[in-house]
Image: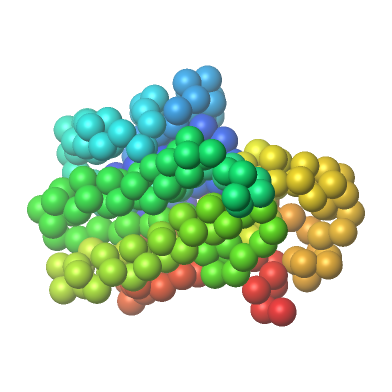
Length: 252
């Protein structure tokens, strides 16, 4: 199969690495044209190089509403429409809760929560003109359950769960679907700082079956496949839900 997103125009944020890069590549493999957004110029440029002519790179911070509006409108102008937005960009700044600086609180909420709000807000008018669309937001298992050193991060991810449900209800009649993906521990750089607080990445992976029953970290492409399903018409009856892809972590 190579046409599940044929003719669709997509935006993927956090596309410079990890789940975002894997998803941008996966969408393009299935026929989409993809605007790849990231704060890291080299990373997003490499993603576009890997995809080719059906991708376009944008260097932007999703916590800046003006920039989000700009690249959303530019996507519509470039590709003549907008069908899918995958609000995947995020930060994970772990620490002891009462020692967290205002900068950590603000950065976490600005990127994870406000960035997702902006991504949806500026996409929806274009999707209404298009007659529908799919909004996909990356939450986390930590939007459903807590872990040590992640109180602020978990707060931001829990907000994304409810944001996604609320948007789904508001626009269901207009054929705009909104869903969230909750990954477990996936082998991406966003988790490395947390791993250091848990004894190091090697220790986390050596003991991963103690909290992730599948016994290994997830791979970015595995989450990208979930995003692909939500982006495609195969998920036409799915809205307002959280798809948990966590190797069994929250089943315990």
